[in-house]
Length: 194
View 1 (cartoon, helix red, strand yellow):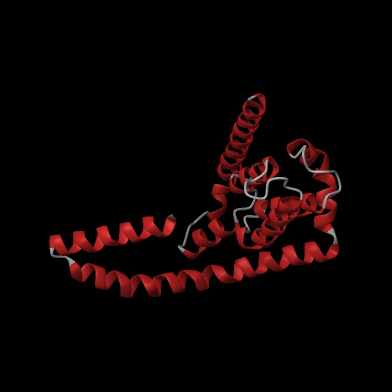
View 2 (cartoon, one colour; view 1 turned 30 degrees about the vertical axis):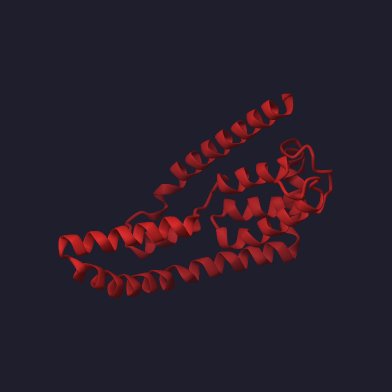
């Protein structure tokens, strides 16, 4: 579906440039924005690599397992259909930890493993389970304490105070997580009544 949206937006842009006689802007944008994107990617790559390495060290040292044990009581409340000490809870905790550090790229493998483990205990393989939906909400709207990628982008663009977005980011992601989980809980309760 997203590919159709992008295709539609590209066609509208090209058509509009033809109609307004500004096709040269498309050519300039393609040439300059590709170079800008590569420069930006190369400027944030070291920070992402550093934090991904730190997450790998945390995983290998058992720090993520300890974090999983710490948040297990909360996770068992959020995921009542998942048995305690199920492997998916460890992957979910690792995904949460990576997302809290603003490392979506490091969180993705944990998220995929968590979904795979949740699918194993899913009774209806054709439909997402309640636990899978809750995890998706938590993963999408998760609390971010250190928005690593955003900080890297702000540094790359010469921000005078790149860390000033940390507190508003924590507040916004906390509110989005809380709102998403409350909505998920409400929909789950309403669905189970019917």
